[in-house]
Length: 246
Image 1 (cartoon, rainbow, N blue to C red):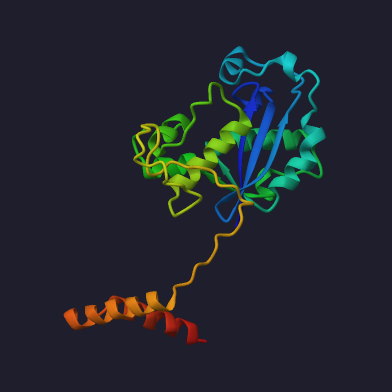
Image 2 (cartoon, rainbow, N blue to C red; image 1 turned 120 degrees about the vertical axis):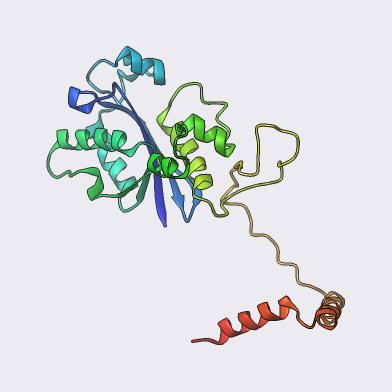
């Protein structure tokens, strides 16, 4: 399963008022693991940025003066997200801006959902935590995701943070490390995430020695004699049945 966590920064709040995308950031998940692949680009919007927007993300017109335009990077962006499930926080906002940019380019481009499915994590968060704050900052606090380095919004940084939140919020074991749990660091908890190098070597397989197998069998026999039943036997029978079924 391939997912792409996406975020954008913009010149303002409404694409209908001519506001444009000035930054897009994406990170890739495959089978709920961060792969290390990402797409990130700042964009020249050909218009001024609202002061309120600059206060949020800190991106200025001067910084963007020499950056490419959306038309220059659209092929790479759409190739990166094509066929994936897009994971976006408050998806209507980002989808609306990307659709506006694609519509401005015209044929052969279509709306974003012609290229990828969309999952709105804000909708998921509201279902899990009704009546509570569900901003990225609030979800970081709730799930123990470290965002201390986030002084301003940034598309790639927010996509990386959202990837961690999404993995925690949707449950199931992911690339979690619990080594630091209980180590006295109040910023961490049982849901805190530590990224693991996807290129790490495989763990060695250590097989039991004969003496250890004999000791294990003796322990199981003691359990059978004491209780008349051993759950380990049930598990082995189920495993053997699964292996011989067609």
